Each structure stands twice: as structure tokens, then as C-alpha cells.
View 1 (tube, protein in one colour):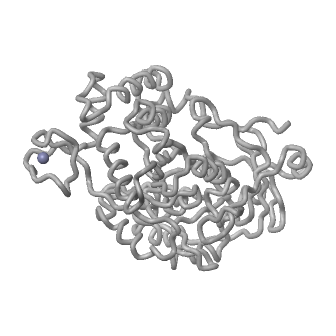
View 2 (cartoon, helix red, strand yellow):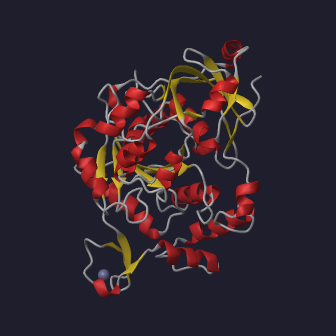
View 3 (tube, rainbow, N blue to C red):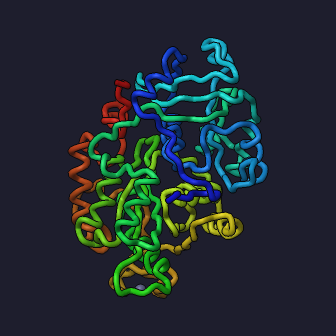
Length: 418
Ligand SMILES: [Zn+2]
């Protein structure tokens, strides 16, 4: 049976088997790519970005900027672009109609059929996607860092990435994910977007979203699942290390706060744009393709600084609801109330003077101290695992350091094509 993704299009993996791949790339020019582009190549090939089959041409980019839609009318909020400088284009002797091999870590990753080479005003992209042209916005900075020409065309993977430990079990592409959901018998699945090690506030965000998603369904047997989908991409100093994020999220299931019957953890390769509302729409599209039926959106989803209002993302999602095949589930903040003696929602408890909000800074200092925090703030199993990950993967720190950036094992490797 066809698996239908965003925009009503069938999800098809664009991946060649090794023998055919070797034949196809024979004699073609090889172009090395950076990690952001490699992540997006993988996403395109496995169907995370359905209905995209490659990097955007000018008509699609223009339409995404002006109408938040592809040229064919399908809702799309973040441009997916392949950039090159004039000098590189000249050096490689690249022209429209060429096929080239994109290499990563020195080995062939994908075939790129170049259909178009064009220019586009980067400021216009920033204004459209981020609502600002300030280069201190990380998404704008990423846009300004693109070289001066964009290349549009189809991508086909010629070599599957090898996912390195401890990440192997968590890379579950759309077609495989949908199979797993069927095996579990889940009829509704809600996405929890994360780049964090979970404290109990996050745990309750998931629990709240699970109740909301369950809605009117019968409760005789569990048929609603939560998918924690961690965004894995470029790291900045001070972020949690990837290993701690993915393993600690899964620990909530292993330690019994959830179970196999309602909880799964996976990862998606993506460099966060911090586009707030537009990124919320993009996350909805990604998770539609993964087979989810619902998506939880909290306060200031994918925002940064004070660029977006706390509920701007909710409003934008509401306005495009009819174009989504996934139902947004909105959440207020969860916090700890000592009077109630529990984690509660700011929409429920009225002991406002006593609220202890889960601030990133407070949680960080708890983790830095290395002294086990109260279990109503941080689960002991999760805390122990954060410390273990620091030793095992983080060169002594659960947060990204220069040493980690320099010496960590990459999340995936591209092996030689044999
Ligand atoms: Zn209270």
C-alpha cells in the first residue's frame, strides 16, 4: 500500500543499490559538501522532506518566500537550498544538465542532477522566513553564509550513511517508522520535538499531549503513542551533547515513566533555523512524513531571543490547518508547585506565588553541580545517565565543549562505496 506524505504525495525512497550506484557515478565530477547539506541530502532521499525530490529551484524558492508554498501550491515554509560560489562553479566546470556526485567525508553520498543555477536575494529570504534581516538571528546568519549561486535539482542517494553507536537504533526513516507504528497498533501518534535532556516539565508536556491526543478514543487497550523526535544537527558550545539527548529521552521509557506500548524515541538530521512559527510549520511537515497524526507545540516553539511571540507559532499553524495532514496539539507550560506537591500546568494550579518554573538555566546549574536533584524535577535514572554520558561521550561534560566538537565520533559516517 502506498504511504502518503505531506501534500498528498506518495513517500518514495530515492536510493540506489550499490551495484547500480557504482555504475551511475562512473566518471562523474565529485563535489564535496558540508554537514548541513549532507543532512538535507539524507532527508530528501529517505522522504523526510516529501514531496521534495531535491534542492529547490527558483520558482519554488520564490513561492516559498512569497506565499509559504511550493510553486505547485503545496504548503512549505523553509527553503531547502544547495549553494555554490561562481568560482566553484567555474572550477568544477558545472552547467545545467550535468549530473554530479556529492561526496561527504571523502566518499560518494548522492547523485545530484543539476536542473537550474540561479541567484536570489538573501535579505528577501531572511525577511520572509525569519521576519527579520538581522544577522544576529541564527537563521539569517545561516542564510547570509550561503554562497552566491543556488543549484536546483533532484537528489538520489548512492550510498547509505552508516549510523554510529549509540545512535543506530534511533535513525528510523519515514517508511520504516510507519511500519513500526502499524506493528504497535497505534492509531494516533503525537510528536514531541526536542533538543534537550528531559526534566519532568518535558515529561509532563508529553503526558499532557498524550491525553489531548487520546481525546475520545476508547481506552481498553493503549492505541496512542508518543514519538520523541530529536533534531540532530550542528552543535553549539553549551548545548547538551547528542548522546545524552537521545539516550536520556529513551531512558524515560526504559525506566518505566512510559513504556513500549506508548513511547518511542528517534532522530531526524536537521540544522535548526530557529524560525519560530515558520519552523513550527516545517516540523509539522517533517512529522507528517514520519507517519504521525498529531504534533505537540509548546510556548515559543523553535524560537530564539525575542523575535517571536510565545503563541505566534500556534496562530500560524491554525491558519494553515487545512493544508496539514497532522493535527497540532497546543500546550501551556508545565511547572513544579511545592504547594500542590507535583508538576502541574500553569493553566491548572493557582498557587502563582509558589510556582517554580523549569528554567533552562536552573536545570543546567543542577546538572553542572552533579548533585542528584529532587525526583519531581529530574528523574534519578535520567540524571545518572546524563552523568554517564558525560564520562563516556562528553569528555567529562554533558554539554558541548571545544574538545567534544573536535574529537567526538560523528553521528553518521559515509563509508567507501564498495
Ligand atoms: Zn499548586
